[in-house]
Length: 166
Image (cartoon, rainbow, N blue to C red; front, side):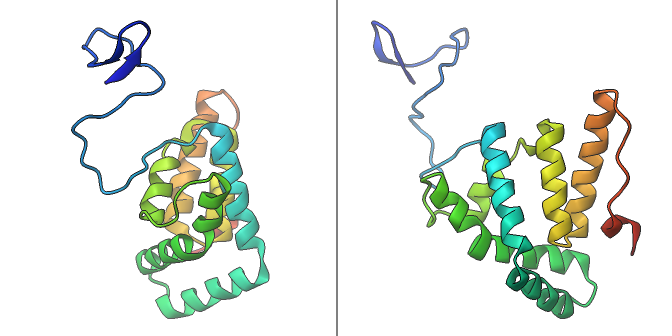
């Protein structure tokens, strides 16, 4: 449904243009907020993630996680999700005036879903994954970045050291 000029709240038909804002009448989601960040919002979010993981205390937490996970990349990636949800994402949600109590990890994952749509955001995504030492997501970000580079006709970047060493 959408508010249409001169008609008020109306049910949209297949041939109607979708306005910027719509009302879902029968949606039963688990959260009160669903959104996608703009490119600018993604840049802000990933800059905040980068700043968080540049802190010595954050790197010490990652040292501890790596010891606990004993080289298991999947287990480490899952542990990073918990750290992001509990520590890194709440300040970002507050920055954008979004609720912190509605599945912050899933909210952020959904909001940043289009991060791979530009070279700039994907480069920053890769940088944060490298800072987190998250090999699995760094590989995904690097592959996405290479695809974008090829699409723009620019040389592919060199893989980060994290991906060169196993």
